[in-house]
Image 1 (tube, rainbow, N blue to C red):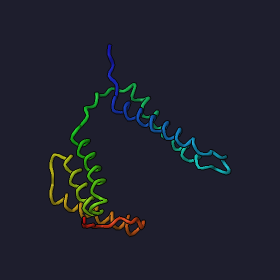
Image 2 (tube, helix red, strand yellow):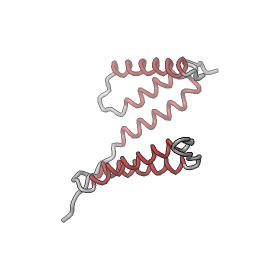
Image 3 (tube, rainbow, N blue to C red):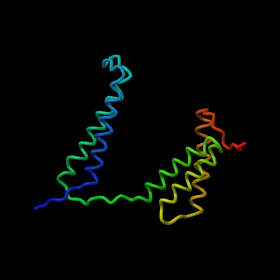
Image 4 (cartoon, one colour):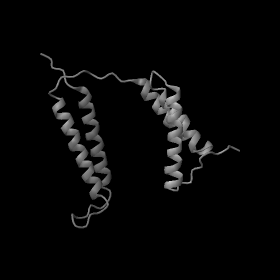
Amino acid sequence: MTRSRDYKDIIGGALLIAAGIWFTLYAMNYTMGTLRRMGPAYFPICIGIAIVLFGALLLVPAMFRAGDLPRPEWRPFITISLSVLAFALIVERFGLIPATVVMTITAALAEPKLRPVRLALLAVGLSALGVLVFTQGLGIPIPAIRWPQ
């Protein structure tokens, strides 16, 4: 008798465990310190261990639960990856607002039903929020709009 497993949670739990292990091992490059005088590695190692435990809490019950093998959805993966790439290529040359608008429009192509008014409002809102947070709030020297020369 073959028993199916909940592969979505198995994959998710395994990814969490892998990320937690990587995070913990990377943090071990710093000094740990003690509980009274915590070093720079103390908190990241604790977080890494917590991520590993959460991954195990997700993975172990999934081994005993029925589920389907997930089918990857390529359209969202490709469009969101392209939106991040577009942002990275545009922000330096044209500024934060055009990069955010292009990123928002490109990422919205992941959704089958595109709603233009909602997309325009989202692009304007994210651009305004990005300018307020990064240039005004954090003082990062990114121009809102830059005209290429």
